[in-house]
Image 1 (tube, rainbow, N blue to C red):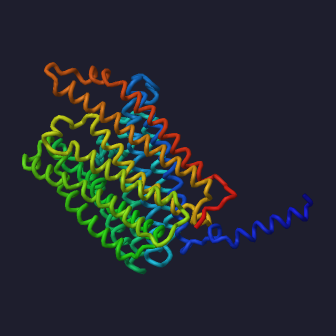
Image 2: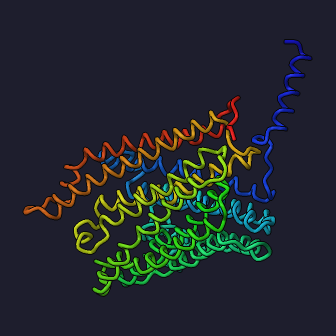
Image 3: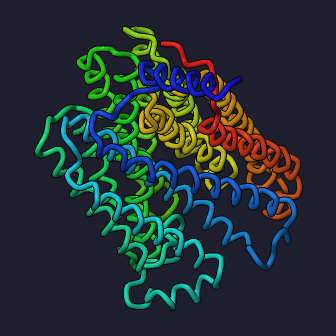
Length: 484
């Protein structure tokens, strides 16, 4: 081909791309682009979380794997802390994209949003390095924990100075979004999102309350952990899911808002009093065994309603959105959230059952599927919908979406098997360690159920492959465009 012919072909290609509605899409508000680094960081930290999950999985069956470089307790801290941090990055990115569009105005301060991003990323990275580089007790001494003791509790292992940094980041983030909402349009989606985000920040303040009395400590510890994941995070999830469904279905907002109001009402009613299902055996008053059982038994209802909501809205859609992958993630969020948080949560939430199952692998099975189904998947839904837009496309190419859908099914099916294997391990653990006439010790029981840990590890490898495919999908270029 001659140079002039090549130039003509390139010119035609550029002209076609410019006229292609799928490859010439502009963000409604330029400041929405600040969400991109948050989403990139979220996926990067997600990869780190799964790597340390695989390390822990091997340490379950090969006790001295990577010891003493990475002891099990350190790997677990990193695994759970990365989970929290990457989801927070995802929520913040979603807020920075969603709120300007719902408010019909630019973000109050994009520069503040970018500054907040770097502060949060650096603080999070330094905290993880601290976990890995020095003993935890030394880290506590280095970071002033003796002045304001807050460390040493599950999920809240962060040094006091990091917790203070998280509060400052949250205040900056909420100020930015609140000013945007106050000056713009108010919608049900933005109001529910802001309620959830403010609740997230307010309940985190209980992480600074660390009484000497262990019962009192665990009592208020759940005000952070439970009222996050079974309370205000569900509001954030509902708002994010509603936002994406509005965009990909074209259905009337009134329909989605009615669903959203009912879901949020049931979430708050069941979630707040349902905190009592964590009070069964910690020394709290006995009436919590009744209140906790009754209201936690209601907690699957909002997740079931969310599943009906997602499928109902998609079935009534007014358009076939070219981003099929985002629609798949949205539907998957409803189903997996109901199974993980709803069904598997209910399996061991009643006090007589929880008496035998508390702290076993049944708890772990519920936690894995619930976090993936309810929160990881809704963040992936938001990323799947918004990333093409921030790259100038309404949707990725068909080839890229095929890769992304493969990643969806690999991760989701792998998580189902992780949950099933941990459930089987948990049932055997309860039987051999807590119900038998001659109960085995904890370690003897772990040896007996090691087979299921190997299966869980294999499923984890498949999940990791799916996550890598999700990342690869954003770099796939296809000549065939996603069809509208």
